[in-house]
Image (cartoon, rainbow, N blue to C red; front, side):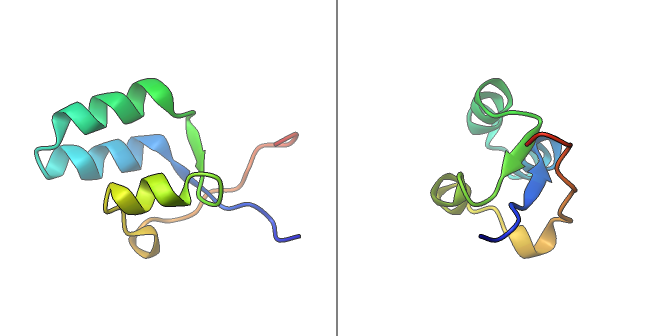
Length: 64
């Protein structure tokens, strides 16, 4: 099994806000954890138009 990849929720929110998608950014900010698992949330991130190649991955904290 591959190691999960995470991105910071703040980065996703910032991308959405830069596109003037404030309602979506607010929803992401409320509903997703601080570190977003790109595998578990791949369909959502794709629907939001988030380019994961443009976002730096972060290491998962121990226990994730």
